[in-house]
Length: 254
Image (cartoon, rainbow, N blue to C red; front, top):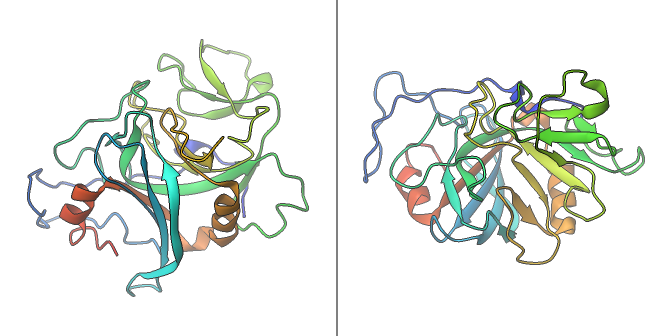
């Protein structure tokens, strides 16, 4: 299901929506952040500061209603919970913390899922439809806000002007990046310091929080990867329960 693609591959839709504590109305110029999506991954947590939650997947035909697929499963987000990120919804859509580099919060909002990655061989990835990024020992994601490669996945051996002091090694000895999905957070434009290297990935152990990604069991990840289709414009909605209910009607959430 996957081919090499940078995090900054999706043009973000901008929403001009007034922030309030009540349900948002749709002003002139409103653009539905899920207008194109036919596959939806929904992550919900109990509060902004909760690191545990659930993931549920849905699908729909064009202009149809959302139908749940399978049953929800357990996930973890960042150690300190969620914070508004930048994605298909625009930026912060109300009160609550805002995602920043190093804050150990996972981004809240709506985000395109543009590619998947892993350490798998050709046989293991044969039934995957998404663009696939194979990882090796030199694949890194740059998390240094001062770098021109900030929030990009690169092969460090192919970069002559290496200008970063910090980057995540994408291939490690642990299970975390054996399989994963690229989340297009802070992707276009990439704003230094607004958060980088956001993925859905395998957790090390059940209930293990992350430094800003969303993680879950490997068997659940494999099912998700086999289900995702680029033609369905898959998206991630990630919100605390109160914000999910507040935005449910405006965003046409299930």
